[in-house]
Image 1 (tube, rainbow over the protein chains, first blue to last red):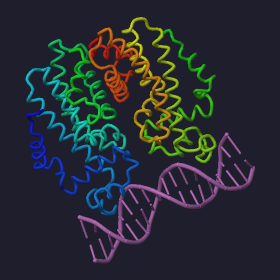
Image 2 (image 1 turned 60 degrees about the vertical axis):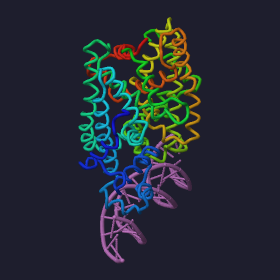
Image 3 (image 1 turned 60 degrees about the horizontal axis):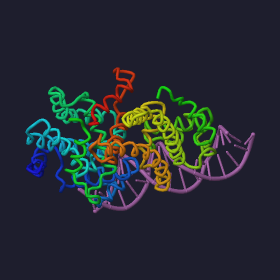
Image 4 (image 1 turned 180 degrees about the horizontal axis):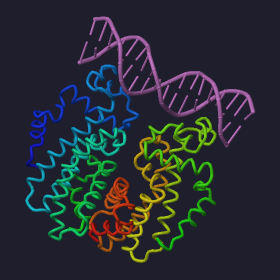
Length: 206
Length: 206
DNA sequence: GTCTATAGGACGATAGAC
DNA sequence: GTCTATCGTCCTATAGAC
């Protein structure tokens, strides 16, 4: 990951209009929305809270988004787009299969506990707040992301490096890694993101 | 687990008034509340929904519980009490350390995906809906439960059977196992609870 | 693109009869 | 212990001026 220019990836996604520029009005609102949705939950966050966080009145919000739910959906969609691109880049730099798996674990831990952590938590905890139609759209985006994982795990299975079913391994890892957001505090405690990645791989029979 | 009489444990907890009798008015309400809170979320579940689920009017609810939040707290408290007792019994029947770990994994998967699954999901996903004072009370109860896990994992570490830090292994397992509620469907697919337990242990380096 | 003002409805909780 | 009726509050979203 140290050799991937994460900012270059972000800039190219902004240029393609796949994610909002964090400096734009829309981008700033989505950033604040992610924080509020994670901290208070989607239902307990009011449009007044959202508007106040970017310094406007609640009525003005509806000039940018038609409904409150559209804001939640935008947070999720842009987060998946960004993280899929980051993960793809991280994996391509890895050589062996084992290194690829490590790169995936490291990148997902970084997504969950780094800059996009608030939005990733929203993706997990506020899933039910999304309408069924929106859920279907977001799920379609996730398929690419999950495909990266499954491809690596299936190859590890084929060469005999893992015993369990690849899709089950992926689901267990999804739960284990996303749960870190509830307890991992890099600032106090001394465990770095690389150290945490080491621990995950030390638990696994590889 | 096959030799533990789960119903006997439940009956003794009812006798000690640590959990409500599922046949009582209070017990039936808590069961319906767990289902509604899991399906729609705490915030989106109204007191009118809760009352309708047990066939009374919304005003009548407040004869049994002072506030809506008190219902959420009761669901969580009684669920932890029951599952701590079940897990304790499951572990005592196991011989070796490795068998104890398997018993813990099996028991937690059963809590999450069996009868108390709805309430266990509420415990994870609706945690933020609880006031800070209530959170502290429920956390105190969880300490016993977590102590059972840590004791086994630390012994496994001492004998060299696991490489990673016990408390990190437990947290990864918490995430992985609780996440199964989002995808594991025993009815279709053929994977039994024992099969799922096998997969979890097959992923781990033991 | 932001403001003020408010429509229109849903919510948690209470009061008092039975 | 349940009912009916309703209070007071908060919510999302809209309307129209600037």
